[in-house]
Length: 239
Image (spheres, rainbow, N blue to C red):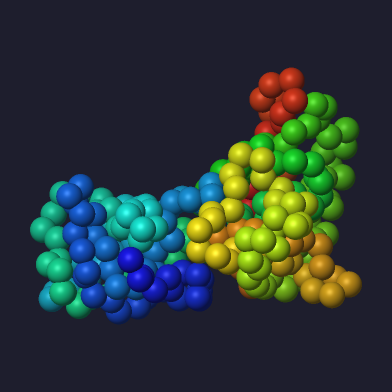
């Protein structure tokens, strides 16, 4: 399906018009253009509301459907807008923005702890990465300080695109062992933190991020848990 992905074009967009183009058998709603980020890559689907003809429908989350289209999942059974209905979609912006801050912060955590990532999860104010790390960091205060120094540098966060062949030639860009960049579209999105001599990170990612690291705000290191002989789970929290 040729659906415009507004969340990718402008992650700061909070509301937008759209038209209902399909309803799924499970009660989901597919719009002509999606403001909502669908669950994927460790980032939860967005929540929010739809408004049309004086009616409001709460959206609990968004998931990927056939052809990669974003499908909106209502919070409870209700009358759905018919195909062809023009409406306005609105995000739970506070929740989304916390996802953006945490997601960008986890990229920085992978810089501070430069080890293979075996898993990860993003929440509204908390997040974690699992590392292939036989022993925990010896100085957790130093990890937290290094993380906040990167935040305080207020580095620019930008995106670009490379071909699948180019990514194959640069396997070091893929830090995650458990999740591989989606293929089949010919191009893969890269997220860059810093530029030129100030660049600190470059990796494939389809999620939403803040425009500068300073927007993340202060971070605290949470639990460091043992997840097997070779893995450690490192959590972070927005201070």
